[in-house]
Length: 267
Image 1 (spheres, helix red, strand yellow):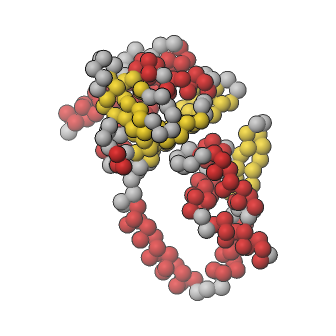
Image 2 (tube, one colour):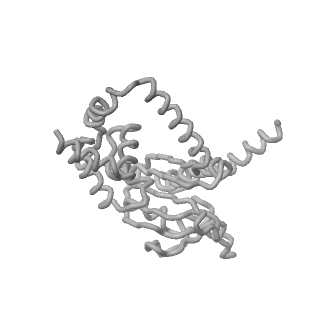
Image 3 (tube, rainbow, N blue to C red):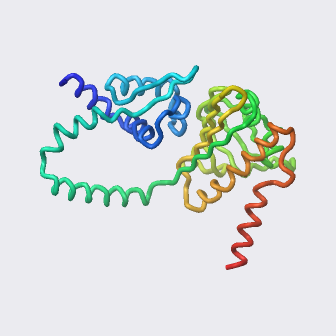
């Protein structure tokens, strides 16, 4: 029993492993690729953290074909609660918990927002990867050429398609694992440390692909609103191009701009 508890406390001591448990508490049955989304680390590193959690019996996994689905096992945590927490005076603990919640809420007000979007595309992972990294294809469905050699540490530029070479956004490529994972900073060309981070995760299932875009450390509520409207519009155009060979008849982000202008006029 003592040895098992040692493993539990060792596993819970690491913030990345706690974040993985929080993710599985919110949604069970996640694949390795899904758990990696939003974590600025390699699949190998995440796999090592999952192994520690498995050893502590804090998670379990089930194979479905070639995928392994991970689930939270709350039993060891409940054993900790029963042994060290339950015997204490409950009113005092409730008061302390209220203080903790207020402190966390105050901290959360300064936390930069995140955005996650998932779409399913009738395509192969290689086709989706090419659509994300080919300058001509991004120009077709995004309205900007994404230009880079897509190697970790390289710059990338979100250049206008008018031939001016002007970049309206860009950043640094952080991680590439073709054709399944691309991580890069995203922001104004000179954003530097204030840039947000975008992760593309490409997962195949028979003849379709699940493309997950995770955008974290978004600078402001205004930028979050732009991301919440922009990513679905861009990915809808990408999906149409890969599935039909044509982008949508009108640029979808123009619809958002028109609707927003209409609401402002109404006010």
